[in-house]
Image (cartoon, rainbow, N blue to C red; front, side, top):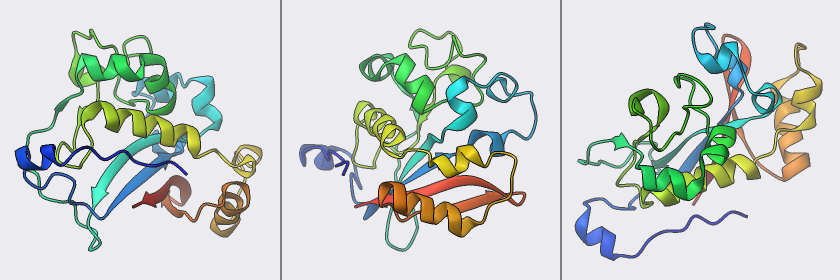
Length: 192
């Protein structure tokens, strides 16, 4: 199992509500389900990997009541140092950004347009610093494999139960599935 690396208690003294979440909820996305228009570059020109694989879309700290712990820090783009530590190629493959101008600029640590090319660190109080957050999201993207059932059923109707069963059989994962416009869209998993 993938273990989330929580940082020292020193951070808790500096950032209010640091790491108070009860669980991390990871969302893996079937990108095609989120392409409402081909105006997004990844929708009109998807990578080969995106055509047949789930990718990470977010990792959210949550309390047991479902809420996100309060954080008074402002979301900011991920730093160039964090992007370099994880690697542009890994981020492009496992944590792609739909709004990026193009694949060459996506996750470019030197981007002149970071609002389009670099994601924002939305959970700075969550108990992971930005580099650890990005590494964890990429690790989860690698760990949660796309069941062969999904790939072999592209363009066909399959039941949500068969998708759940495939995750259980292939990876021993209990998952929550989300649909969009009647079609499979996302897979949620959680880690304490």
